[in-house]
Amino acid sequence: MTTTPDDQPDPGPFPPATLEAFLRCCAGDWMSLRSRFTLGDRGEGDDWHSSERGELVVSYVDGTDGGPGGLQVTPKRDGSQQQPSLLLFGADGGFSTSSGAEGTWSLWPDGSLELVLDSPGGTVREKIWFTKPNLRLRSTVESRADGAPGRASFSSEIRRVSRPA
View 1 (cartoon, one colour):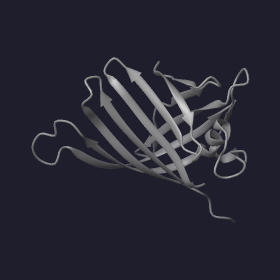
View 2 (tube, helix red, strand yellow):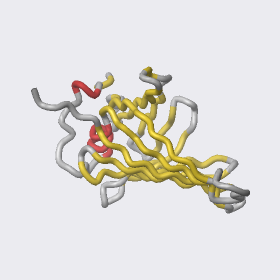
View 3 (cartoon, one colour):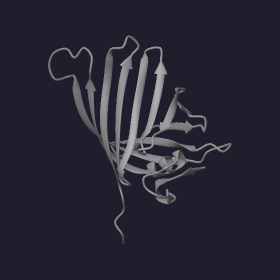
């Protein structure tokens, strides 16, 4: 069962102390500003970095077999929703995506969630943390298989909230 942002359950105390609470805290409509950087061979000019704004709709997905659950992430562009991505988390520290990628997760004592994807081409590490219930930060760093730096990004995301009537 998917919980939509409009009927999002109370995620509990802040900052979230369990993976399920962290995932529930992620549910909502988010405005994002992402800066991307190419760390290795940057070439000439300013094409080694870019910034873009975007919107995401994130829904919590209930876990099965006692698992912590997952997230359905749907980008919004030009006012329309795009194809959603699904991330399902296992209690064993693993996760899988709807694209077939598999990785590991760690919820650190500081309340941040780290996702690691290993592939023959290298490793991607993403760290997600909340500074407030409606402000989420993400950093992603890619390391190539030969040890060279790849790409990196930093995102600040603000949850859209409705004004009280």
